[in-house]
Amino acid sequence: MKKSLIITSALIALVLLVGCASGSGEKVEERRDLPDWFLNPPSSDEVIYGLGMAKMSSDSLSRDTAIARARKDVALQVSTRVQSMMTDYVQEAGAEGNSQTISFVESITKQVADVELRNSVTDKVYAATDGNWFAMVSYPTSNFTEDVASVFSRNEDAAFADFKADEALRMLDANIANDPLKSSVTAQ
Image (cartoon, rainbow, N blue to C red; front, side, top):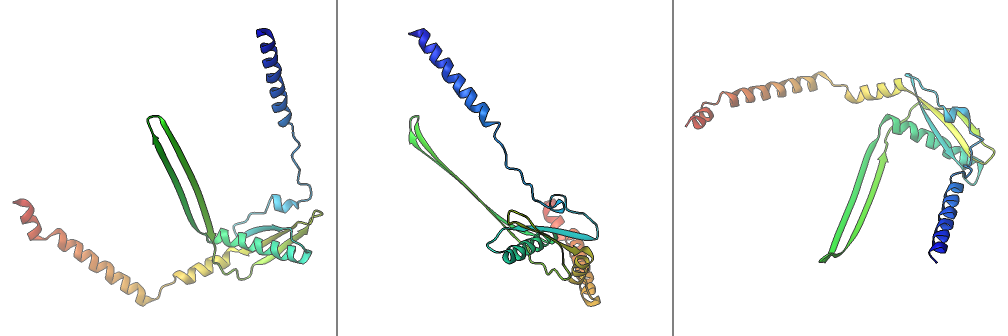
């Protein structure tokens, strides 16, 4: 009886081992119809490239969606505001070693880009045989730097007001540091 139990256990272990080993040799579906520029996008200091892909019900909708997603990719590279929330809830109840724990974790992330992409160009569009459409959009970094410069440009009046505010803060700090009432109170 003991011998048959050992043989049965060995057979079960062998079946499990063979079953696990055969799972590791599964074929992974290979992507065959992708444009090279989608896998290896160009990089440049003068241009930001965005990539997008879509497989919708019609070629026209697929193309438009792929281009829109490529523009979204550019916008996220230029400026992204990320909002994130995580809820982590744990409750344990019971007494004398007979307790139960309830655990719940939820993570939500939202990315928002609000950028005007003037002069963005659709460089390449590719229709794959499986119905996927791929798009590459470029956006000159000079446009981005011009937009940022216009946002942060200041006129002379604003610069003078900043100067006066800094000067007033320095005077306040000096008066606080040299306050005779403060030093006499701390000396007592």
